[in-house]
Structures are given as structure tokens and as C-alpha cells.
Length: 458
Image 1 (cartoon, helix red, strand yellow):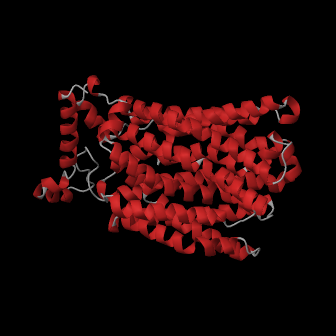
Image 2 (tube, one colour; image 1 turned 90 degrees about the vertical axis):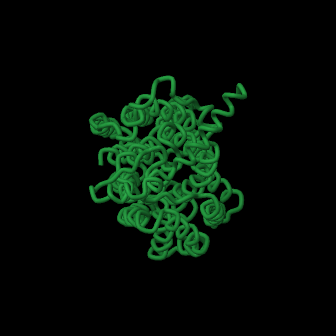
Image 3 (spheres, one colour; image 1 turned 60 degrees about the vertical axis):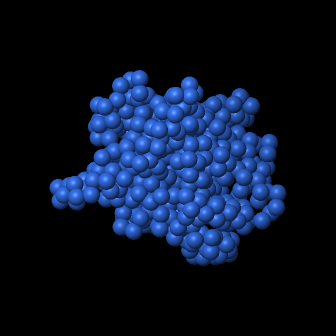
């Protein structure tokens, strides 16, 4: 709960920029007009993703050395302070391009913080839950993400309704950024009082300081898992950012909806998505995360174009149904990924390897998704571009997931003994110890490769 709440607060900070993208474009890029203003605003959004891999590597490796909970507390404070600073920046009319530079710096710090946040939170929850409930309990992390986005979008919608678009443009847009400071303090308190994960504690007892793994070690001996993970994150992050980050601006800047109406529709969809995310996590424990993800990918390939036809219909009810279709399939990934991605890696490198995997892919494809989509629409005047991109990502996803992803739902994490909730499960494990420690062969192969390289002097 503490991890999910902290994650929600982190993504409240990160998300309010998305929902104020059109307004921020007018405040910091007044010389540019029309769809290109949105492109500039989302370019600043994408800048944060340049720093994400650096933050991911730094905090990920730190998490494998010092522990998961310390990193989670540090990243939250960094995010809160950088978000607060955005609200304090004078506008373009006051200090010219200096305002744009200060905005870019604040976004880079946000990105550096976010690089360690999500992968660290996924690792923490996956290592703190029973194997047979890992999918369901890890899906709570994405509930935190949705609650953070809902709080951000809800606050922006409420302020726009109360203050009006003119006042929001003048000074009202700053209020959500100011609120991040007290929220960050609450999140820091919660995270600072967490206990370290059992898997990390067990690993530390057996490990000396000389055994700390380097980035080079991770890339040399875990490259296959990293590559699979990056492709998995690709379709996950593209769909996620189309639905949660890009769509409010698409409704406003491309389809001509009022900012309040567009945001309200997204908020309603996200609220409905919360129980669906939990349900998908529950199903992943029952039938396997792989099957749930495959179902979501096939659904997007078939229904993305009909969904965007509904969204572009001009009928509010049809728009809602179109958004809901996208939301349901996005939920199939959100409910499964937090439990699946950490299971790709062994305990001694999990935080660092997952941070590298997630943040490189998120930087290449997540932060650039709103920018790429808005730029292509400005060039082609075709509002179906997001649908085509979602279909492309889903086709890549179905190939990778079907051919290369091993489903370990309900099994022990790589490098860890089984984590059980009830004593009755222990008997089952003792009857089939080799099945319980299914990852031993993989571990043996990695150790043999390390030994071979040592003998070769490499």
C-alpha cells in the first residue's frame, strides 16, 4: 500500500504536465501557434525521458547495493522538488527563453527521478509478495499510477472549471505544481517507514561487497532478458502513453473539445480502469500473465481503428466508448507488467537490470509517443495516426510475447526461494523442489559463462 501510494504521488507530479500540455505550450511557446505549439510542449515532455536511462542506471544500481526502500524515498523527494520548481518559473513574457531553459532543467530532474521510481517500485512489490498472488498484488502499483493521474487530471479539470481557461493561462496552471510539495512529504514519510524486501535481505546475507554487479556485468550476462524486456516495455509504454498522456491533448487540440470536457472523459475512463487493472492482475495469477497480455494485444490489433473512429465521431457517448475500448486493453498490460517485468531478472541484478530495461525503452518509445503522434498529425492532418501506431506496437508485441516470453506466473522469482502465503504450500514445494527452484538451470548457465570469461581473461 505504501509503495502504491508513493507511486501515485510520484505520477501525480509527472502527470499534471501532460494534462496541462496545451496551456504550458501557450505560456512557454507563445510564438508558435496551432498544432505545432502542442508539438513544442510535448517536446519538452519528451526531454524528461532523456534523463530517465541515466536516473534508471544510477538508482537501479544503488537499489541493488543499498536496498530498495532507500531509493524509493530519494526519488520521491526529487520528483516533488522538481515539480514544485516548475510552478515557480516565470513565463516567457517575463524572462523570454530563460523560462524555456528553466522548464527544460526541471523536466530533466523529473526524468532522472522517474528513472529510478517505477522500476524500483516494481522490484519492491514483486519481492514482497507471495508467488501465487504476485500478479494481483503487483497490479496495485498501477492502481497507484492511475490514482495519481486521476488526481492530477481531476485537479486540472476542477481548476479549469472554477477559474476558467483565461485565468488558468494567466496563473492557475501553477497551482497543481505547488501542491506537489506537501504531497511529496507525505509520500516520503510512508516510504521511509517501509521494511526492506525479504528477497533483498536474504541475498545480502549471502553476498559480500565484492559481489556487487556492474552495468557491464548486467549487459554481458543478462542481455537476452534485457532485450526481451525492452520489446515488452515498448508496446506497454506506447499504449499507456497514448491512452493516459496523449489523449487529453488529442481531444482538445486535434478534435476541438473543450479542455474541461476532454479531461473529464479521460478521468472517468481511468476511474473505471482501476477495478479492471486489479482483475487483470488476478487473472494473471490464475491463467498466466502471458495469456492476459496476448488477449490485450489481439484486441488492440482488431479494435484500435474502430475505437478511434468512435473517438473522432463528435458524439460524446461514442467518444467515451472509444476511449473505454483503449482503456480496457491498456488495463490488461497495466495489471500484468508490474509482476511480470521483475521476474525476468535474478535478485542480485533485478533492480539495476529492470531499471536499464524499462527506462531505455520508455525513453525511446514512451516519452516520444505524444511528440511523434502529434507531429505526424500536424504533417498529415490524419487523426487516425495514434490508432496505426498502437496497432504497429501490438503486432511487434504479439510476436515477442508469443515466441520469446516465458511465463513464470505463480513461480518463484529468479534467484529467490519460493515465497508462500500459507503453510500448506510448503508441503507441495518439498515434494517437487526442482520445480520450485525452476531457475537453477538458467543460473548455472550464467555462472558457466562468467567462469569461461574469467578463464579467458576477459
